[in-house]
Amino acid sequence: MAMRPAGTSRDSLVSAFWSPSLNPGFQSLTFPVGYGLLITQEEVACEYLKRKRESIRWEDVNRIWYVTTSAGPWLPDEWLVFEGETGGCSFPTEATGMDGLWDELKQRFAGFDYKPLIYGGTDDAKHLCWERRLTSHGT
Image (cartoon, rainbow, N blue to C red):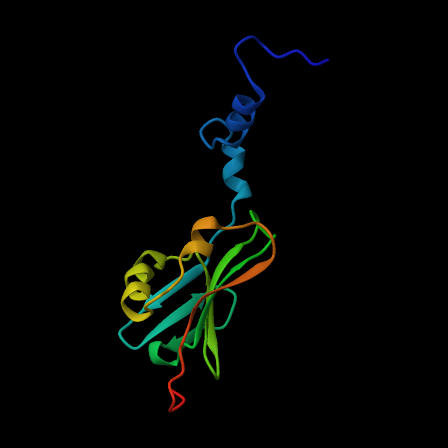
């Protein structure tokens, strides 16, 4: 049976290990984001250090997905995917410029479902947050 010093618990030892101030090596476990989000009146663009730039015009967005992967914490594991008929744009929720997206979602995509983002996840999953409703004219 392992003995712990008086006044310590397993939870406090785990917290100390993951605390960057108490374990500077923890900082090296996190990944560099390397993803940037550019928001304009016409489009949202995703710029990457190691991938080709992606963009989609706001009016071309048909669906918005929240995708989680089991790749974290070493790789981005929470993504938003803007899907259109002929392309799209994907970026991790940690991307630089993400803070500017929340107002756009509220303004441009009525009925956007934030619940999947609030609940998060660490498994491989894909959640539909918004879908364009087609009218009788197909638009």
